[in-house]
Length: 443
Image (cartoon, rainbow, N blue to C red):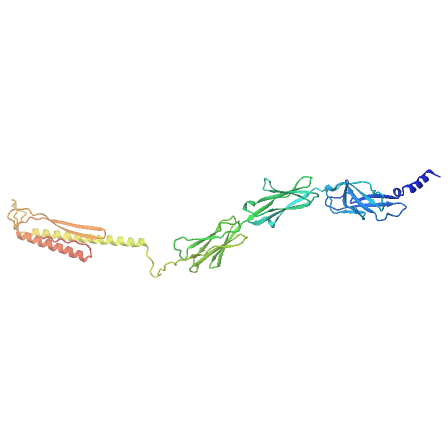
């Protein structure tokens, strides 16, 4: 008998299980990726004998039991594997009786890690605008990447570190609440799973502030506005994010609008008509809720009516006509006074020539004789003043009559002539309507 056949017969008789039972561990997929599932199968390969009755299977990694201690199923389902799940795996099978369990060969399984890529930053609420006092959520995510990913959020160009989180997820959130004005800035995030950080783009965050109640101011060219004046309506909200739209109202009827792209106030010009008397108000709105100002009352008067049949004379013409009238009156008065003076002189000369006791041809001088005087005394000169005042002009007529009184008849005649001439002057001046004439009748 051949030696090989003898050995085979001996093996069947001594250790039949060692020859006809063999365990093999398989992994699907053979090179798993982080985040994916892994299925381990403990396969039995038998030769020339039926399978064992009610076998129990166990799975191990690096000497530690994985899954339940024993299971009737030859498969182990791992829903998600990570880089840390890499290691040496094997399985065992236990049959009824006191026989020792059968063990498969060891197999090393390497879990593959994918680097992060396509990092992006989003905001909630969307659009990068948030109201003051609300909550801002910064969402950092990666399109690809496995394993534990470390997320970091930064603020501003200098990269102020706001928050750091590490988790088995491709998305992470960071909240800013409540939002203040200082939170208006640029933000970005970074993600890293061990292959180096990947950065997102910059996102601008604008904190919006609702407008405060505006103040309406009316600016007129004069203290009391009149029809035809142009009145400026100025509306300004002291608080609020630009741009701000202003609406102007007269008795709740819209007059017009004006915008302030950079904030501050805005104006609207209105040409007044008779219908524009009443209450005015304005409204400010920056998209976060409108605010209305308090009402301001405007009362004004109409222009005074001028009769078209009586045109108003310029003031300069009144002044010119008054000056001309004054000059003409003055010239007439002076002419009258000169004529009276001339007549007075002629009368005095005629009286002197009619005196029979006075001879211009006498060669010898004679001593003067004075009537009604015991001594030869020189009589004082006689003056008569006629003061004429018209307006601001004062005219004075002074004349002097001095005559030697040789005879009483001549003196008496002179006195009568002077009285008659003075009365004549006064009468003529009164007829000329000259005011303030002083008449002095000296006898």
